[in-house]
Image (cartoon, one colour):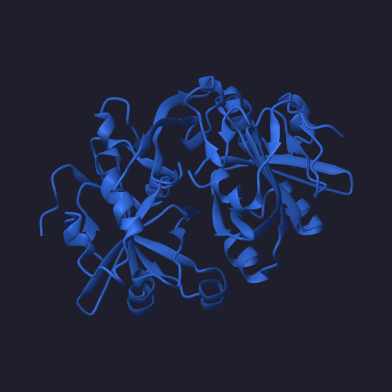
Length: 193
Length: 193
């Protein structure tokens, strides 16, 4: 399956940088023909090599069952162009609206190492396997994943760095606050000591 | 001890919002007369009520010993005005430069519930106790904290929301990438479904 236009592989030792600036993500998952995507503000890098991530997945979500069943998920990093879809995917639950992806026009493409699909229109993607930690999962809804493959939109992530400055502002990543309000990733500052 | 100008208490049920948008933080700690502050990009909200956070603290840091010894730490959210100090506090180690705070002109004020001091010039502060999870700490350098008290600069955080729009850009929070490059928190987007 060919990758969508502009999607390029990110070396695993640079994968942490896709999350280092703290963007809101979409969590995609799949098991036994069921597929879901939910928004999550609580995702974070955990290690460099092999790259690991943390993500908080509430027990009430449909995604939780798909991740626990499959042991796999993907983190997709959305951008300003799909802020509305991101909010919708974080508001609707597949438990009550099983057609939530179609309803919000969300389309996906195939991942390389996991069954979880990757969301079109995002600007970075991390394919992950769950490192089983039952106590964290049960007590804190906290999942640890090892990144198996990573991808980014080469218009905004090149040579291991986000470069939003010369791309359309619609490709900037998102940082959720509450009540439908996001901040876009803003101005770049280069600091030297 | 009076609070610095502009510093106001944040209700605990809104404390997660101080980290929800994924800013880079400064981790402060104290034990037995020793005090340290280090930068960390890998901090994240974990729960709403009681509010909890995660933060990754490498075993090689001086901060690690102070947190493990005291069971307390604070997360301080720096802004553009102190980006240089933030980078310096993430670059220098107190293990080799015990005067690193003075060297970089970092001043602090007293926290309410923890011995760890709060860093002047930041725009939000979360005082935390460690919830002991030895396996996470040893295996992943991952610490879980319960937020005991929270504060924010009322010029940019009011009524439970960040409001950067009408304040000087120097008060915007920071999102670290790598190599001395940060992004500032950018434009606000209000999305309605």
